[in-house]
Length: 140
Image (cartoon, helix red, strand yellow):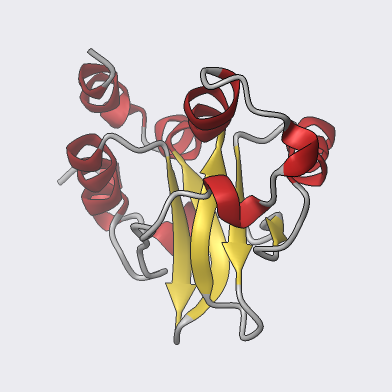
């Protein structure tokens, strides 16, 4: 059994998740990502339910590639949805496989319908290095 099969997402997830509302200006979202040196921000509703996610890839493909003005956009305009999420009790192995299968690098962690954490592929690789090759294959 590999380390990733017995490690759970709750063991590696980041609980200080940066999140915004759907109405947050995109310029604010970008500033949050830059200031915190993170690759994604979760978009949540009033009950802390996950509505969407904005990643660096979203910014490149949906804004920069289309030459849109970040000053006129809100989080809801470019967020990816529906969001693929995991529970804190998901194994790291299952999460790594899900990331590969869905070609995603960030998984919000939801418990009882509320955002409680996030895990990025870097978190998975740093604590379960055996997934490096699996996630590298996804990038090809």
